[in-house]
Amino acid sequence: MSLFQPLAWSLARAETELDGFRGWLAGQNFVAETPIVAQITARPHLCGLLAAIAGFSAPDLIRFELSLKGLFRTDLVLGNDAARQFALVEFEPAEATSLFSGRSTQQYRPWSRHLEHGFGQVVDWAWIRSDHPHDIALTNAFGGPVQISAFLVICGRDAGMRDEMERRRFSHRGGSVRIDGVSARILTYDGMVREMERNLAVAKSFATLP
Image 1 (tube, rainbow, N blue to C red):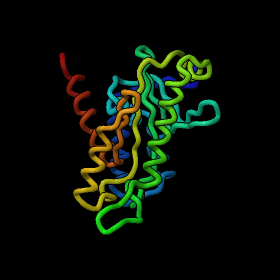
Image 2 (image 1 turned 90 degrees about the horizontal axis):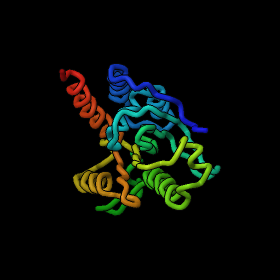
Image 3 (image 1 turned 30 degrees about the vertical axis):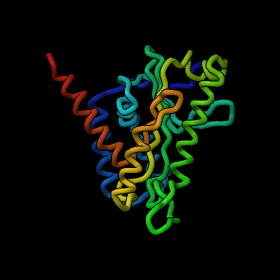
Image 4 (image 1 turned 30 degrees about the horizontal axis):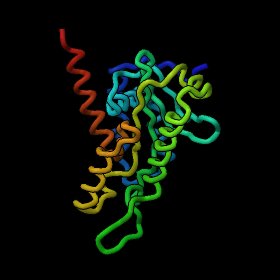
């Protein structure tokens, strides 16, 4: 039996929820994981906009806090049932050191434990699918086979990058990494909002076509 709930995704509700989240985020500086995830998960149609960032059409399945085999958990999964396509999303804190560690040399800061944790989660999910593609627990949880996957990690804020080198490092890692040939994108929460705004504008333009 599928562990997902149906999502009758609405463009108008997605726009309203994005407006609300954008306003809330603009009023924050740096913020811990619990409050920012609570703001996102209270807005399921906002979450649906993550599907376009992951590269597939409007989702009709959603699940928060999905766990398999009692080992690995992901914060959000969005699915398109007809295409059997699923995006697995990890949310991490949006604190000052969520992207790069507070410990550093004069010129270099290593990646933070928060970002590495989120990325490690999607690596483990990719391994489950690769190692157990026909496992009954996997197919039951997803209501059938998973044909296409996508991975997203949302972590930190733009202001957490202190110079151009960190911005370039983050841009490269955020858009260049693939796991088993599948894109594993990493965005800040500010970057997530910008991507949502662009995708929403595109969706609205198609909605007005005759």
